[in-house]
Length: 230
Image 1 (cartoon, helix red, strand yellow):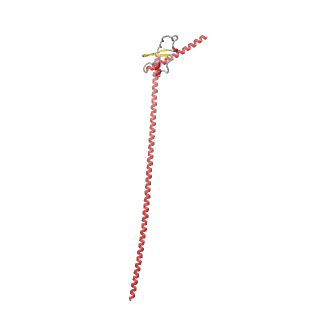
Image 2 (cartoon, one colour):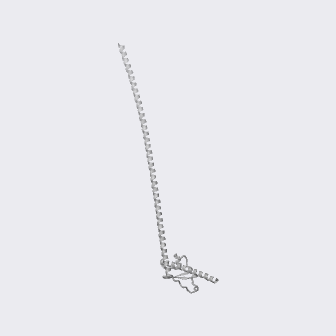
Image 3 (cartoon, rainbow, N blue to C red):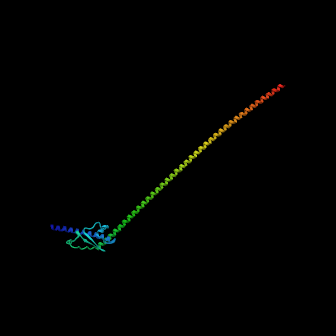
């Protein structure tokens, strides 16, 4: 039983190892076919450098010859008894795997193109949104400047109106002062004229009274002379 168990475990390990080798071979084949679509088959180092593989395989070596490539098993993937052989037999690339690789490459290219389109559309949308935001900001700045200019014009107009009103009020006050001074001067002139007229009238009256007194005295003197002759 113990021998059977050891054989069973060994068989499971061998199956797992073969599965890992097959999976690694499929990964490398897919990478090579993707590289071929873009130009030509590449060495493992170039596959890694150009992003077709994450790392170089520890199970297979790649030999590129013109328009073909071969997978050479190394390490755990070398068949039993072949480790010390002078050379190893390259694996044959499965045509179906090639088709799958080509389809995977096309799907990847399509997905990349779609992602690129989405990224470009997103960039355009972002640029458009930024341009719109910039336009709105510029319009807001223009509206603000226009409003400020209008407010300034109104303030300046109000200042001019106030200055004009103040000047008009000052002119009216000065005119009123001149009219008052003129009226007072005219009143003074009238009063002075009235005083002169009164003085003149009184002087004339006094002259008349004096003349009447002289005439009376003269008449009395004449009457007295007449009475003395008689």
